[in-house]
Image (tube, rainbow, N blue to C red; front, top):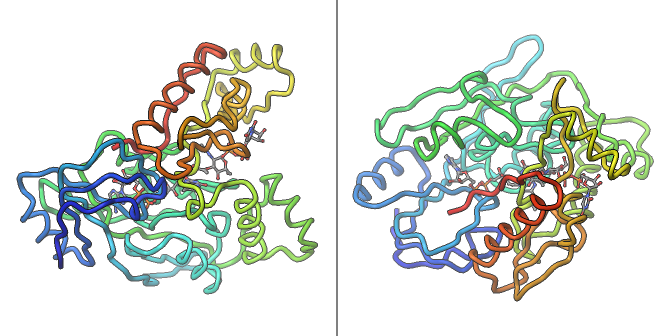
Length: 336
Ligand code: FAD
Ligand code: EPU
């Protein structure tokens, strides 16, 4: 176990922001994590996985701990489900591909989301009609100050749209060590999302399979989202706003093209990308900070943007959308 001093975090965040960490270390077991925490009693800690949902706005004056705990295990099964425990340091997309290969069903729509297994419950990752909460069974986390392991079941995680207790009431209190997923033994496919159906047709797929859905999702994602290896980004920078039905009806009168998706009886979810595009920001660039020209919800670093430049751009967008639509966008990305 090695502790590095004053290292650049550019390679450890998909925004490729060039800040430094006072100290940096990788841990591959709970024991190594405990040793590092015991060493770092006077400083702040930051746990990271793939760094794909983080915006660093300044140098980090503490110890960055990168989770590399590995391992995937089938822990039990019943008539309907397999229960698969994956360590937090497993790469999410590799884990998805492994499950598809093993014929564990239900995770295929979540193909190609960057990052690690350990961060997947943090914001209840979701895409193309499925969220982690739909396949989640339980997780094991380590309490940083009480120094003990705690299990969380589905209810205890209080999952919502891009939310969980780990982003709200227990923020910065736990390190997620492993997550157990409950996956179907028999295929139960979710192709309700229009784009998947269109892509399957384009691919001339007549027999739907987990592999075909995964491939379709991969094609859609590659066509829509900028590749962080080419242009720094963290996916959607903002959440899609969920607004009262009455407010949606009023907006729809003014903008008949506005699409809404019923979130529940009283609320409708609308596309933040549309609000940002209508406010004139799509394709905007100042120095190396920009709003992507194909997907307005994605803020990008064209090379040497600072985290502050990206953050300031996000504030300007929030202010403009608020003035134009009376809707306050919430950031999805974790600001550090
Ligand atoms: P990091 O960025 O390393 O960390 C994110 C947060 O979780 C930080 O606050 C960190 O401190 C904390 N954290 C990380 N690991 C742990 C742990 N083990 N214990 C406790 N805290 C921890 N997200 C979606 O939901 N849907 C998408 O479709 C999607 N598409 C994306 C596309 C692109 C191109 C990119 C770049 C990002 C996308 N994201 C998407 C966001 C991102 O992939 C997810 O949020 C992912 O789960 C982040 O994982 P990570 O390991 O990179 O987390
Ligand atoms: N749109 C625009 N302008 C744009 C882009 C999109 O007006 O520049 C409109 C289109 O009308 C489109 C709608 O926005 O129909 C929705 O766009 P898209 O299908 O690309 O999805 P999104 O709302 O931008 C959300 C998630 C993504 C997830 C996809 C697929 C959030 C914040 N984002 O994006 O998650 O992959 O749906 O399910 O919920 C992430 O969280 O980082 C992420 C990428």
